[in-house]
Each structure stands twice: as structure tokens, then as C-alpha cells.
Image 1 (cartoon, rainbow, N blue to C red):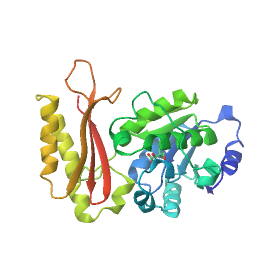
Image 2 (image 1 turned 180 degrees about the horizontal axis):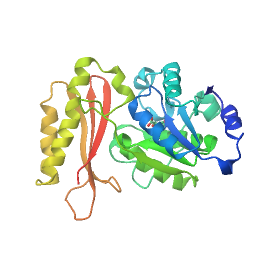
Image 3 (image 1 turned 120 degrees about the horizontal axis):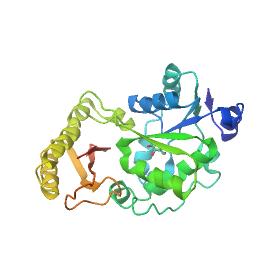
Image 4 (image 1 turned 90 degrees about the vertical axis):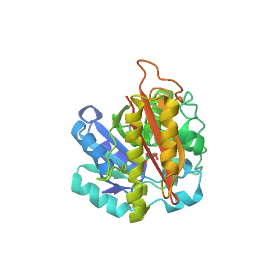
Length: 281
Ligand code: PAF
């Protein structure tokens, strides 16, 4: 069953006393794929009830075209979730139900995590993500919430958000799921042509090569080689290739013992923006 309002989902959740219930929450923007289902399955294995929200959040888009073209497939999503488990509750609010009459972002400071990469290239993006998740967490009151590592920067920011907003929810990060060709699963993949889908596999190949190069080469060299590989690609247009400390997402200049590094990519296949990342050590 799809709940379209906070009142409706809250009524359902409050039937059982909160002490006997553990609520797992998977926030999504819909167009569900196997990556989402892996989060849902983990949530089902760790909680007595699971809520999946489906809401394309306008405040996290800085590009109206991207927002309008974001796939919206609520009926198919609901059918897919019911095949996984009848226990799943779906919350698919209107913007008004979630935000009230002002659909605007709160301004957040996430300790600098918000300035790099996605924050740099998508103006106001993390204020929008923080705002909608704060509203969703307050509406659902989950014990645990599940996020994929494809959006690794988002995952770090969500952990910061719950400490800023003092929300009693445990944030669980889950591994990236990939298509057989290596492309990270994303709702945006639905919009790729066959040729784009096949060619976009190179994103992960370049990341894997960077991981290999990282064993012996300097950070500057690894980055330069990866950028050169992107520049030779037929149609992928690189927005950024970044090597950063996993803990604070600051751009890494030099390798230091004991630090964990990750490589991050954003690239366009036509007008479709794809992101991915891997751990380097
Ligand atoms: O990762 C997403 O799909 C979105 O950013 C999220 C977390 C559902 C917030 O709108």
C-alpha cells in the first residue's frame, strides 16, 4: 500500500508499540533498481518494519531540466517492492505534505564536507538533501536508515546531518551494486541509450585502473592518467576526477600512512550525469 501523507504512514507505524518495533528506512527518489533493492533487503534483515520513501526532491536539483527528466515510475516501483516483501510500507508524499507550503532548503554547514565535488558542481545540492532527509527522518522516526556508497559524499553528509539535527537514527552505508559491465547502478541509467550504457562502463574501468596505479604512482600522476583516459573516450565528458581522503573528503595531494583514500568521478554521457567512486587502499 502506498501512503501519500505523513498522517497515514504515522498511523500505520503507531499501531505497534515503538518498543516492540524497529523501523528501517530507505529514502529514495524512485525509479528503483537492484541497488535500491539491496538496501531494502538489508533493512528487512535488520528491522521489524521497513519504510521506503519515493520522492523526487526538487530542492536538491540545481537544474530544472534534470529535475523534470528524472524518471518517475511510482506504480512500477510499488509493484517491485511488493515482490520483495509485503511488509514494506511505501511513503510517496507530495512536496506540500513533506515541506508544507514553502518548498525551500534550510542552509547547512556540514563541516566542509559540502564544498568538494558534488557540492562544488551542484549548487545548493546538499542543503536540499539535508533538508529533505531531516523532514523525512522526523516524519518516519526510523531506528536505522540505509544509503548506498555510490553517493559516498552524501553518505558522509547524512552522518553529519543526524549529529547536527540530533536525530536518533543509525546511518548504515551499503556497497555499490554494479551492472554486469561494471557501471554503478543508478536510476539515471534508465535514460542511457544502449551505446551510452555500454560506453559508460569505462567509468569503472578507469577507476579500477586508478586503483592499480595508486599502488605505485603519485596522486598527481594517477589523476593525470585517469583524466587522459577520459579525454580519449568517444563521448564521456569528464566533470571531475578527484582523489580525496575518505574521512573528510578533502582533496589529497600526497599519500600519508594510515589514511584511506578514494577516487571520485562525475562524467556526462550525453546529458546524463553519472557518478561513481572506489576505495584506493
Ligand atoms: O540518494 C537519493 O536518492 C537522494 O539524494 C535522497 C537520499 C533520497 C534524498 O532525496
